[in-house]
Image 1 (cartoon, rainbow, N blue to C red):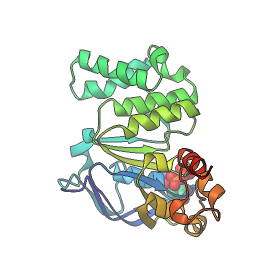
Image 2: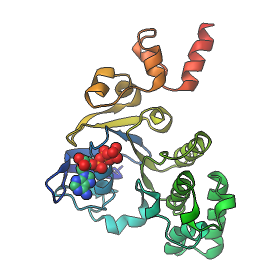
Image 3: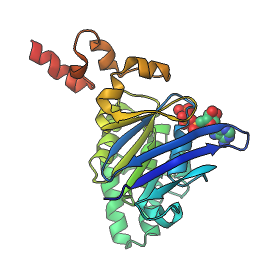
Length: 265
Ligand SMILES: Nc1ncnc2c1ncn2[C@@H]1O[C@H](COP(=O)(O)OP(=O)(O)OP(=O)(O)O)[C@@H](O)[C@H]1O
């Protein structure tokens, strides 16, 4: 089966001369859930823009679905959520913003409406649907922006830190909404704590914008030296149990840590 995304030699230099991503080779297969992690300024957002076809790379190319290197030809199959939710919220009400995607795809009004209601229930937006988006709080805007991207059911989701301003309860809801789908997920984040619950594979971007490591979650997130060298640190549970438990048994999530402790009781 052809990969959904295949980047070769992807490089992007901004007009001021900053090379934000450097010679990136990345292949993502259908259904994979990948966390792209790296320190602030390492190039994650630029990589997301380049993979999503929203900036023209200065070198290299991305092939989508084994078919084309023209992102516009597959625009409605790619759901790109940028860091700033205001990029997604430009209508008079939250409902119109979420309906925008399905409407663009030519879905009947009734289908679009049902989709919006289902997403609103999933992401706790029911009471906000008739509000103007600019009156929402930061976390509410972020949830509405996630809903607006999910609304058109893209095959590939590229999400830039959708948790930033969102509280714990809704982080869980967003996580469920984006992982309970059949599609492919790329999750760009500087924070590793949620990664094991979201992804099975981790791509680590180094400070110079090249890929420093690419492997299974456990392999990367328990490698303290590798992470430290790239300005990151392991998730809290790994730090807590390090030295007490062999590396292959280090709990990556709070749930896994609880299971481990119960077993030892
Ligand atoms: N429009 C721009 N013009 C010039 N340089 C830029 C521009 N946008 C980003 N950069 C630079 O490119 C590099 C990568 O930035 P990018 O935003 O991709 O990093 P990031 O990993 O997403 O960071 P963060 O975790 O802080 O969101 C940084 O050095 C940044 O200062």
